[in-house]
Length: 214
Image (cartoon, rainbow, N blue to C red; front, side, top):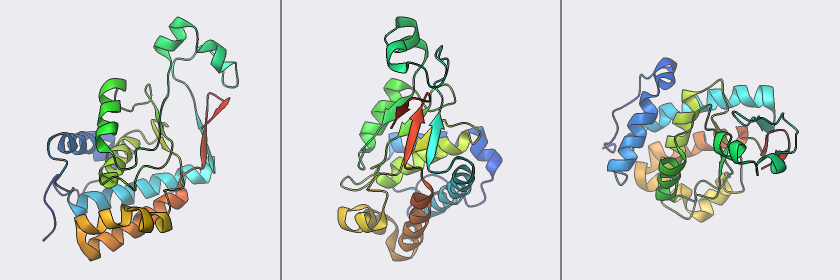
């Protein structure tokens, strides 16, 4: 039987993602019962909608994603490093760069608690290597993809492709086993294929403020 968890989002539509309710529901579930896998309908729906959004991003932005710094007093391409030393600039303008979570959900939850939830005024760049090694890669993707879908017209969440956003690496390093263990062969194989489609659409790097390449 399929795992229990967050209610099935089989019939969820784009407007519901825009409302932020799926992101809140998934995040609440991760905080209270992370050991219980998300319902497979939930994951498949998230992956379906994420693929659509990433296809649009890839079409218009290509392999390099541009991320502006909210509230920055420095124009894109300016001396960002020097401006970052100014106290007011450091307080008001930031982009959170988080990389190599490797399935460690607690690290992500700590970052969200300390640095705030993703939004157009608090963008996150996930610098690849989200899964493998640890056992909660699925949940990290679920949380961040929901926030990405909440703000489709803004780069509130950007996920760069690292060397672990690769199915052959996942087969060797644990993400494939994680998915199969949580969802069995049928749902697991479907999700793995969907993750592969998403990985192929991720940018290889992001340029922040027109001058910092991540």
